[in-house]
Image 1 (cartoon, rainbow, N blue to C red):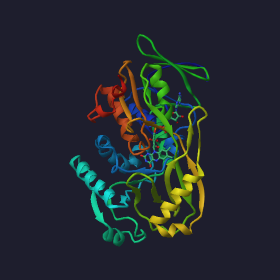
Image 2 (cartoon, rainbow, N blue to C red):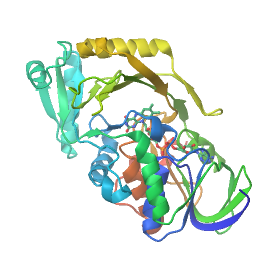
Image 3 (cartoon, rainbow, N blue to C red):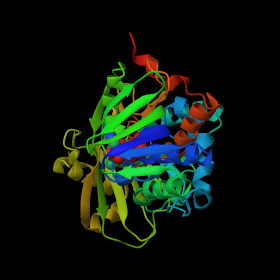
Image 4 (spheres, helix red, strand yellow):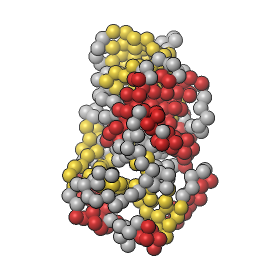
Length: 371
Ligand SMILES: Cc1cc2nc3c(=O)[nH]c(=O)nc-3n(C[C@H](O)[C@H](O)[C@H](O)COP(=O)(O)OP(=O)(O)OC[C@H]3O[C@@H](n4cnc5c(N)ncnc54)[C@H](O)[C@@H]3O)c2cc1C
């Protein structure tokens, strides 16, 4: 589409972070144009595992994850549907005493930040979760964590943002962006031109291009976490499972399918294509069956992967640009931005509208990569 539009804020990227920012800015009466090169919520936000967890995160992310957690309970009020969010709990398994010691240390550190975790020994673990094998020696239990359907979350935030007045454009790739005296000029590959007071970089795995354009090169690379889903079977696995080291994550949805992931495929941001490596699927399937023996009887019906931006230090960039007034970044969620996405949109709206946020975002400053 050609033409020129003026707006308060232009957002590049229509994943969960960008759509939540659009929603929360529009609710404050701020005009927003969001550009999405493909479809809303179709990249990492739409193809991820669906884990909505706080435990296991980098400790710097815990305050954001805690602040964002109540938003998942209020999805119906926020975006008009529950997005299949269920607080099923999250169980992080240890396979040996060293892993268990790591869980104990983490529980102590996370507890100091307000995240209460229960440590469970092997016998108690099998009493409470009898479908587990003898392999885990213990676990850490976070009852308020859970799961949601990623396929509906991003589009739901997009619809809510539109209903609040934001202008979301699909099939519009921001190709050039420049700062002029008063704000920004953005042009899309189809010829649409936008002028804005502020610019938001929520371009996911592609965000390094935007940051680099404003002289903020960042160490971001693309990853492609691999996913598997089985045929439906009776629903027995209540919580979401993780494992120390991250080699496996697994959940069973209410319809009965077991979804699990582990290992990385190939990601290509130039073509927006990612590829599953079969040997990873076999390895993660074998591990899943060692932990939950009855899975061995199930057929795998589909495998997939998606493209995610991972920072060198595996925590995201969130906050204002250090080179360009009016530019705000939120990207590089490094495989765990689904749970954070809704609150990141709130934080971006606070930074733009209020000039500050009550959330401690200093660890995510893009300036950490300078020098
Ligand atoms: C397979 C997989 C499993 C995962 N599992 C989990 C999990 O269980 N729990 C969890 O918390 N996290 C998980 N994640 C990570 C999580 O999905 C992401 O961190 C999160 O969705 C990132 O959201 P986003 O909005 O930043 O990026 P995205 O959803 O990638 O959105 C960025 C958007 O920007 C658009 N874009 C890029 N450049 C431009 C441009 N120039 N112009 C216009 N549009 C542009 C892209 O098309 C894309 O739609 C997983 C990721 C993957 C891939």
